Length: 167
Image 1: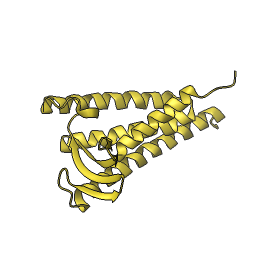
Image 2: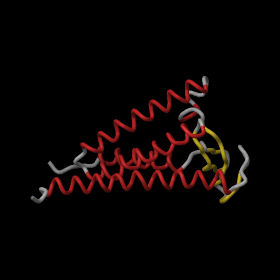
Image 3: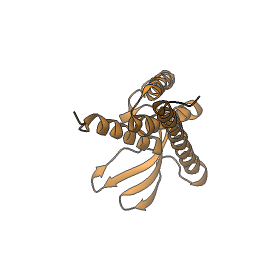
């Protein structure tokens, strides 16, 4: 018995999404391993790569903008739990999705990035951040490749939701 075309394309989209998740996770963890083991960056020191881009090792014990850093132990486990639940919900959305862009690209990037930061929280107690963009008096937060994947995935979701569709 052959699978129906829609079943086959759904299966391919799911496999592609899993590949995106695993590649995102692998690249994120490899970059963090490299920063921790092959640069001699003590916390807070910088390696200037470009006039607007530095490597700066920081540990994010909270979430964006330093939220949940007040009680380190409670915050850590609360964030691990929230991230795990969010990842399961995103994986369920991915599994049910019929839209290839959403399933493959957006949700795959978000889940891969979330898993990368989740591993950091479990192993280190906080997320390894090391990418720093700045220009003159402008300074962005220090971030990592998992954060980039999450932002790109959310951007793809926004694009998909705002895209005009034929009536």
